[in-house]
Image 1 (cartoon, rainbow, N blue to C red):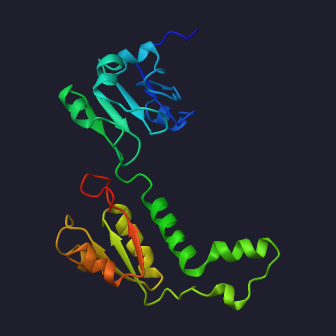
Image 2 (image 1 turned 30 degrees about the vertical axis):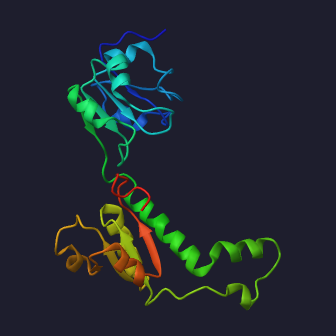
Length: 225
């Protein structure tokens, strides 16, 4: 049985199984409980109806919808989406129900930019193909390297120059790539501050790029881009 506590319980709905970081931040304020749910429709315990806030990742079936909020979280006043995107939370419904939704805009910025550059390097230098050949005992001959290109002087295009797009741009420049970007929502002058070049249309950018890295939000405007 759970020991009696005067502290409110704050659930982390999914993904996290050890709340050491969160509990340290909320020491003396709340008790953090990891639920590790698989399906938000069926796996929520009754006591979450009393929680003042909850944290949510994106490792479960379903969505934090109006129905879920009304049925399971009537007392909740704030929802923390642990990450940058918040597609799995009905933000409009939450607002209409008086519940604030917070995200973590800089979550994973460096890690995602690092991964994007590593994928670019893999494509340009055929790293995985050649490494697999060596691992299988077949030392690649020169012809196996056909298609590998030198990065310096090539052009990388970025769709969406937000936090991650900017981090990618800085890394790409370090490899000697010319960097251009398309983002109609970025303020004038950002290109000059970063030492990259802005283009006014996606087609213009695609026509001159050797590589393209996509870092825009998923919206009706960008879906199927």
